Image (cartoon, rainbow, N blue to C red; front, side, top):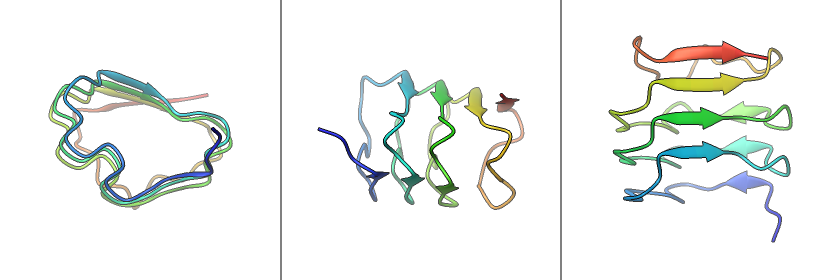
Length: 88
């Protein structure tokens, strides 16, 4: 099944997720999509994603790295300063 967005609270408090590589069919990630995924440490976002809502990764204390394309603006996203942003 292909989907074009990761909807509000899609993975809310998902207990086992440590890494997510967003599928290339996704173009947007909505608010709280990964809220309270306490073990999530790494996120890889493909070039297809053109928007990420401000609190998409809210409540992810283990998150230390997000890989995003150069073309994606992230100025409005709530991201802790300790998180490493890698551009490709």
